[in-house]
Length: 198
Image 1 (cartoon, rainbow, N blue to C red):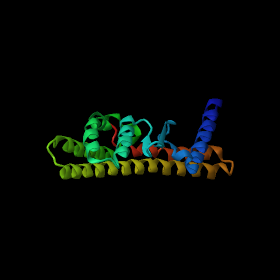
Image 2: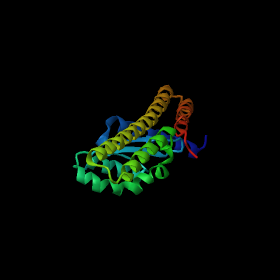
Image 3: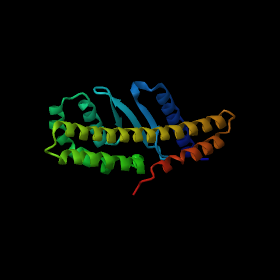
Image 4: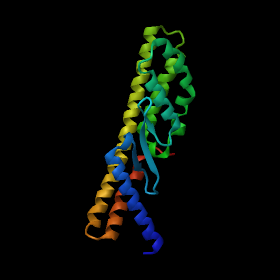
C-alpha cells in the first residue's frame, strides 16, 4: 500500500474517531456525521436563540425552522402578518435541500408543508378560527417534516456507528487492512439513504 493511501486511511480513522466523540458527548447539541464515503459531513445543530433545529447545507429549512419556533407562542395578529413572509423560503425547500437529505419521504413532507402553506395564504378572507385551523395543519405538516429529517439523520448516525464498531473490532486484533475493508463495506450503506436523487 502506498503512502498516500495509508495517510488517507489514517486521516479517515481520525475523522471518524472525532465524529464519534462529538456525537456521543453531544457538545452544544451539535451532531456531526459523515454522509457518504467521500468524507462529506452532515451537521445537525440547535439554534441557541430560539432552540430551532438546523441542518448543514439547507438554508431555507434553517430559516423556516427559526421562524416557526418564533411563532410558537405568537398571537393571531403576529401570525397573520408574519406567515405571508415565508413564501420564498417555503417555495425553495425542495430545490435547496442538500443531496444527503434527498429522500422520497422528505420530499413528500416538504410538498405537504408547501401545500398547507399555500392553502393558508390563499384563503385571505378566513376568519380567526379558520385561519388558526389552517395554521394547525401547517404546523402538523412541519412537525412531520422535522420528524422525517431527524429519522434520516439518525440513520446516517447508525451506519457511521456500525462502521466504526466494525473498524475497531478488526483493528484491535491488528488487522488494519481488514478493519478498513469492514469500515468501507459498512460506510457504503450511506449512499443508499438518499433514494430520491435526480
